[in-house]
Image (cartoon, rainbow, N blue to C red; front, side, top):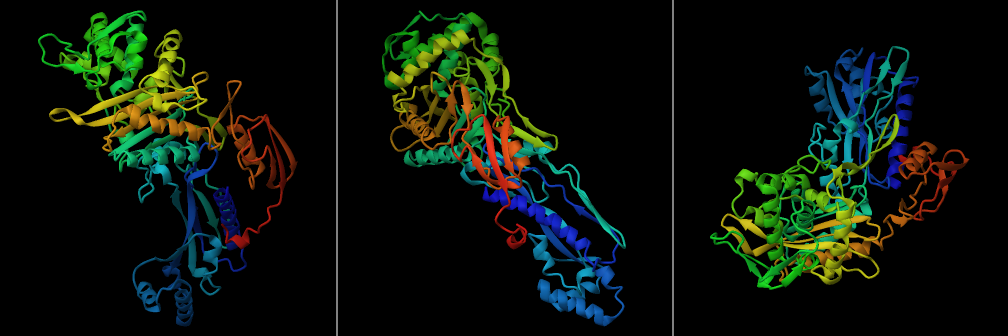
Length: 605
C-alpha cells in the first residue's frame, strides 16, 4: 500500500510542477514543445500489490544555443556560475561546451520536478529546459523476475510478462506541453494498460522458499515448482532454483507421474478395462529378441496387480504391459497422435515467451522399445507447464486448461477479466471419476504417503526418473517428482514439483518431492492468504484500501467480483469494511476523507 501511495502522489506532483513551471511570471521566452512520455503500464499481483511500474525522472538541459545569444558576457558569466553551484559542473567545463557546436548540455537528473526546481535559479531559469524520461522499476524477489521479465536499456522488453503482454503494457501516445511567447498548455499522455497477475506474492514467496529449502536439504542441482488453481488454470506460484528458466525452457523426463495419463488413455481407447489384472515378476522384456529389460524399483515383485493396485504401487511392469496394449489397439501413428493430444511434444500455450515444446519423437522415428518406455515416463521430454496442464484434467473434471499468469487487464476503457483458457476435454468426466479415488489412494496407502496432511484430502502421483545421458540412462542421477491436487472433495489447487539430482541419499519422488508438497499444503492453509471455499465459490481476503481514491476502489471491487459499494464522505479511503484480511463479503463499505499528509512535504513522491 505504501508503494502504491507513493506512485499515486508522485504523478500528482509532476502535473502540479509542470503547471507551476509554465504559468510562472518568469516564464522563459522560448517557443517549442516538450514531450511527456507515455508511461508503460504497471504490473500487479493478484491482490493489487505493485510488481513493476514506470517512474518519471526529470532531466535538466542547458540551452547552449540560446545562452550564446545573451546580451552581455556578464550575463553569460552569471548563468554559468549559477549552474556550477547548482549542478556541480565546473565553470571551465561549461565554458568548453559553450564554445563547442553543441546545442544542449545535460546538467543532471532528479526523481521529482520539485527537486529539480530547487536547483534552477531565477538567473538560469530561462536557459534551462526540463525533459521527462521514464524509468522501469521492478520487484524481482522470490523468482518473480523471470515471471515479470526485464527491459533493455532502450526500453525494449526481453522476456516474461513484459514481452508477452508488451502490446498492452506499452505506452500508447506521448503527451505534450506546448509553449508560445505568452502561454503554455498540456496534452496528457495515453499510458499503457495495467496487468494484474494471478500470482500472489505471499504464496510465491512461500513456494520459492520451500523449493530452496528442499534443494539445499537434498543437495540437489536445482528444482522447479508450479502451483495453479485447479478450476481455472490461473498460476498462483512458479519458482525455479536455477540461474535460467529451466521450467519453461528446459526439459525433463516425467517418470511415473505420466502413468495416470497413460492408464486413462488406455481406458478411453478401449485398450484395457478396469477389471483387467497384470502379472508383475519385477522385470519385463517388452520386445522378444531385443536385449532390453525394464525393471520395477529395486526389482520388486508385485505379483498380480489390479488396475487400481498397479497405479497405487507405481508398477513399471504393469505400465509397460499397458503400453503394449495401447500399441496393439491404436497402432504407432494413432498412439503418437493421442500422446500429442495429451500435450507431449507441443507447446502448452502458457502466456510466457520462450517455452520449449519438449520432445516426443514422431512415430516413424520410434525404436522398437519406444511404445513401452513412454508409459513409465522415459523416451520423451517435457516442461513443467505441459505436465501440469495434462495432469490437471483430473481435478478439473477432464477439462484441458492452459496454465496462465494474467487474471485481468485494466485499460482506459476499464477492467477486463481474462477467462480461463480451455482447449477442449481430454478425458470424459466419468473416466476422471474413476481415477480420482485411485490417485487419492496413492497418498493414503501407496508411494505418496509422505504427501499426506492431516485433515486435508490429497490425491497425487509420485515419480522417479533416471536422467538420460550420452551413453544411456544413468543409475546414479534422478529427477524426483510429485504431482498432486487438493482438497479431493472440491479440488482447488494443483501442484507439480521436480527436484533435480538429489544427492543427500534419498532420491525417490515419494521421499524427496512429496514432503515438500505436504509442507506447501500446510503453509497454504496457514498463511491466511489462500482462497477459501464457500459453497463452491472463491472467497477472497479483504485487501487494504487505505489511501485509494473512489475510482481505485471501484476497480478493485470489480477484480474481487463485488458489485455493491457503500460510500461515506469524499476524498481517499480512511476506513473500510470488511477489515483487512477478513473474507470479502457481498459489498465494500468505505469512509472517505482527507489524507493526513501534505504532498509538498513528501518531495512530490
